[in-house]
Image (cartoon, rainbow, N blue to C red; front, side):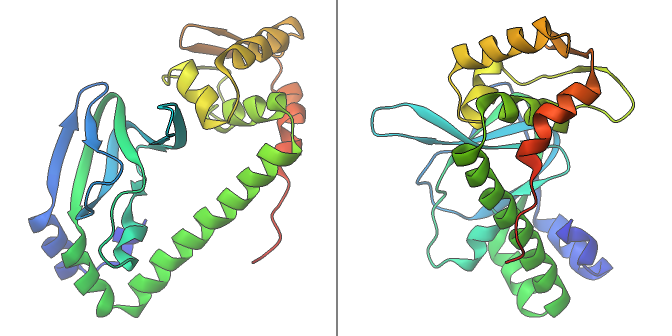
Length: 220
């Protein structure tokens, strides 16, 4: 996380200008096109970043979990506006960071700039891989990879506390296709989902279904 690179004095200055925000389920943090002034760290809960098509359909761009930041890349643009909307999934707590002040810190710290650019590069590589997944791999592969990424390492039962239609939009499948794939994986005794409860019946088989979506991206 970029905050680890801050000196104690810098960290205190950031905290002085930071704000804690609590959103109920479905709370709007900002709308697509709003003026950018702050970026955010998710403390608990989840944030859905999405874009609206001209016909009003919603496309989920990213799901941001606790411990992750979002919107900080906009600091490098002139007169930026949020290119997405942000809505909470369940009760969500965030820390709001003053972007202009953080920019001033970046100007005085090469190490911090490099850390932020490294994080942005990693995200870019993830987006490139996602484009490959969408164009080259099956919907079943994408569903398996998404579920496996959220499964604890040493537990086969866990909560998937994100609505299924949101997951479907995030991995670019129709909700009915998502449901059909889950039924297919259940019939093959790979996994079972009841409500928000997920039970992995055969983790290795799920890994095999997901592995084709985890091909490495060439270095950029």
